[in-house]
Length: 279
Image (cartoon, rainbow, N blue to C red; front, side, top):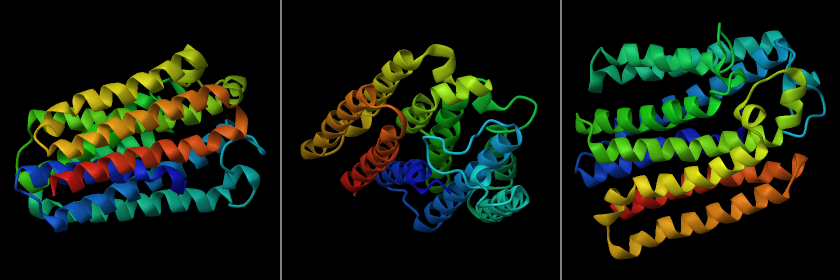
C-alpha cells in the first residue's frame, strides 16, 4: 500500500474541508466518503504500479526504495492483480454513493479517476514512464480531490479553491519527485523515462523547491482571511520544506527514503493546520 505516501490522498480532502468551512458549507458525510474514495483509489494505483512495473521488467530485487512485494517474491503477480482491481472496485462503490450529493454526472468523473489510477502505470501510454507522473499527481491528487470534495459540500467551485487545489497537487508532486530522484539510476538502466531521468537530478531537485514555494503562494488568498496567528503555518511549512530540499541534495540511495514520508507528512500537516485554522 506504500503507507508513507497515503497522506497525499488525504491532504486534498482535508484541505477541501477547510475551504468548505470557510464557505459555511461543511458536510461531514460526503467529506468522509471522499476521503475513503481517495485513499482506496491511491492504494489501487499503488498496487497497479507494483504489478505493471513488475510485468514490464522495470523493478529489480534489492532496490533502494521500499520493498516491492511482487519483485521480491512476497506476493504472486496474480494475487497483486486481483488486489488491484478488487480495491479499485471498492473505491468505485464508495464513489457511487456520492451521486446522492453531486448527481449522476459524478459517474463520468469517477470513470475518469479510475482510468487515471491505472493509466499511471499501464495502458498504451503509461504516464509514469513518459515523464508525466508529476503532472498526473497535480491533477489526480490535487485539482480533482480538492475541487470535487468542495463541490459536493458547497455546490460550486470558487477561484481560491481552484488555486488551493493546484497548491495541494504541487505538494503531492514533490512526493513523487523524491521517489524518482532516488530511483533515477535504476529507472535509467531499465528505460523508464521519469522526469528525473529526462531532466536530471539537479533540475528536479530545483523543481521540488519551486513547487513548495509556489504552493504556499497560491494559498495566500485563503490565508489572508484567517486569523493572523494562523499565518505562521505557511511560514513553518516553508521552513520544513527548505530543510527537506537541502537534505535531498545531501543524500543518496536508501538514505532518501525517510524524506519521502516526511514530504508527504508535511503536506498532510499543512492541510490539517489550514482546516483547523478555518474551524
